[in-house]
Image 1 (cartoon, rainbow, N blue to C red):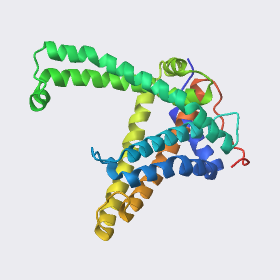
Image 2: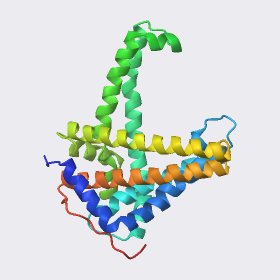
Image 3: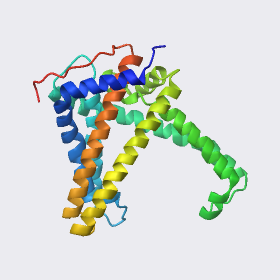
Image 4: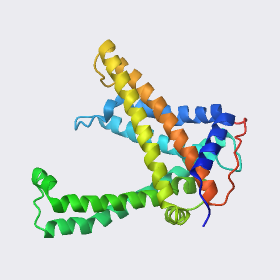
Length: 273
């Protein structure tokens, strides 16, 4: 079992950003910030409305797939051997469907895992009405147990995106590879995820709330295709690009340790941008 140092991964992430920050930023802006801003502009605050035109749903889906490809491209940039930025972007698009299928398989497995919990709930005679359900001790207990299962699987799947980007393997092997790499490192990875996502959530909420209040006061409500929506979408997208880039590079450097691929800094070639 390979060793794991989160602090070492963070230092390597800082070195990658210091040396090739502008190249990472160009990928993040093109494949994370731009599609995220476009999605938020046409559908601010992810408004759920049955009357939303189908083209908006299709556009939001396409933007999400571009963002997913961007994450894989960023991971590839942070791993050896070095490739050009253009090649990393093409690599991200090429590997995205395979990684997406792996994620769908994991999601389906979690739905199947929920069936026993649902059966216990029904056999216990718990009313499925909303108010009664939320007050049921049995429901609260089962929800807590299922949440533990979700956290456990989520931690064991944390290396799926680096494995999908770094290795020419299929969906099933991506899942197996992530499960193998994370063996024995569950608590360290769980702690990393909690700290990272709490910090990211605080940053996103702070920026979105502060800017949203100011923009609404000066330019009016945030409505689809409005100037208010554009400004808020741009700010949210830039923050999302920063957070996504940090996470992608951190996961890449953690993967480098766990896979035995070396922990040194990776320099991105400056051609092909």
